[in-house]
Amino acid sequence: MTEMLDFDAGRQRAARRRAQGVISDFDPSRLALARRLAGQRRTVLAQAAGVTPAAITQYEKGQSRPTLPVVEAMADALSVVPDFFRAGHPVAALDTSGAHFRSLRSTSALERDKALAFAELTLAVLEAVERYVELPPVALPDLAVSPELRLAEVAELARQARTALGVGAGPVSHVVRLLESHGVVVVQLDDATRRVDAFSHQQGTRPLVLLNPHKGDKARSRFDAAHELGHLLMHHDTEPGSRVVEEQAHAFAAEFLAPADQITDELPRRLDWTTLHALKKRWGLSLKALLVRGHHLDVFGESTYKRGLRQLSSWGLPEPGPLGPPEGPILLPRAVALLEEDEDAIGRLAAETGLPAATVMRVLDAAGSETERPVLSLRR
Image (tube, rainbow, N blue to C red; front, top):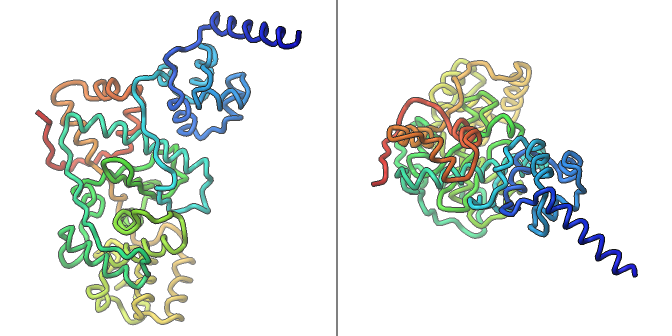
């Protein structure tokens, strides 16, 4: 009798779902993407949609389909249109184990997942762009990295990278532009993901670097970009997030931006802030990075180094002597501008990806807006 009642109750629930209009082409992965992009837990979304957290889990796993009212409620809670959840344009998920985040301890798993979801959107738009526009081929050097890489070996790898990427003597003029010219896609994290620091990922056809522009610091953006380049070149199969891995990427960035054999003789032998400010402008490094570099190269002794750090701390942030706005990417916006010479690029990309035009614009706005243009061509 109980089994019969349960069976009848199940039929009644199914009838109610049919009456309410279950979405037949619902894509579970799109719901998961939208929820992660909004930085919402399943419990919060369930409350907004009037269902249980278990139901949200079942929707995301494809074990059941939501009714139209639930879809509309979820779309409203996640700030997307209901059509965002429709099947037909899958967005590839990025493996969280392959993401090199700069700040694992200072950001939550939810915030990192939110940033990864934004990266997935970026790659979806990029894939659509590349059907029409030829972007620079990926041309990163294949360095001979030891499986048991030691910190002492990193400087030589950075010097090899400078040579392979065509960097001559002196400062790197524009780190982000250098990455883009060698096929790396660089995107700035938008306001919704501003708590996450820079990170990189190498899943898919192109390496991806995401920078945080909200610090408003050119020196920091250059160091962040060089740090992520270090991950891309040295840490293909390395578990991300460890102190050792981050120290190696830091050491790579320092040598890549300011090679020891070039900057050592330029550093003052005492705390000469006038000279350090001049070096900050010349090399595009922060005063703090110059102090750390000088200490690492035994130019500054321990007491001089600590005195310099105390002085910087007393000045606070931002450091004195701003260098201007952060370095920004231009590759994707230029590609879209090239598309627009033919027709409505945003509409075309929205149709190709199945993303709302506003979502495509969100990605492109974060991809940069500087006016200098790389040479690109339409596919014929």
